[in-house]
Image (cartoon, rainbow, N blue to C red; front, side, top):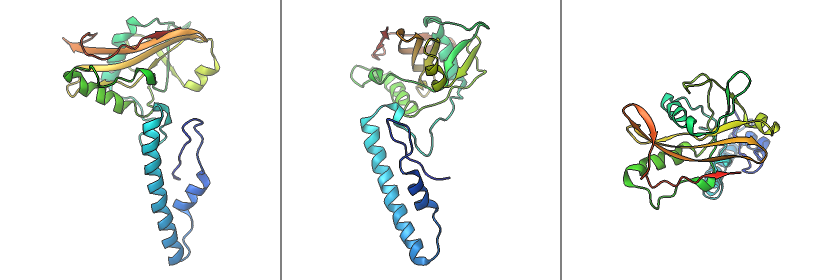
Length: 222
């Protein structure tokens, strides 16, 4: 399929037709083939350079890469972390007793942990959190959250500004999956909501929020 590059602010493909021609254009002679290969090399260099520049200057939503974009969150342990922090989040349910979750993962760029005061045993968690949230992931239905839920796309939720829903980031773990970091937020109207980071640890098979990680809570509410 054609390689597409997206503008970080609009989400629209940049010169999609031209890029598609460079990669899939007809080859009618050895001269044209060599010319196309040269264009492919220049295009690849431009894409790599653009990716580096964009990654360093924009938020997590800019990524629209050829791979990785919108891959599902299918780790059952991640949903166990979500379930563990749900009791601490104001939850509004639908008439059929379900919580509404935004399908796309979300982070608050201002709340991305820095390396300043983070303790050594949590640094791996923070690194994984940053990696897992370097592109948008998709939550999936029918996972163990201890209560019923439905998953709706961001566009549909934004169109209904009076509705209530929750957002989760992807979860960052350490190598043993006994420490984790997640961001969660709730929205209950145009000027109603809040969110923060949660550092949790698995003790005796149960995920619990902990202090002393050095990770900033970074709470907000409206």
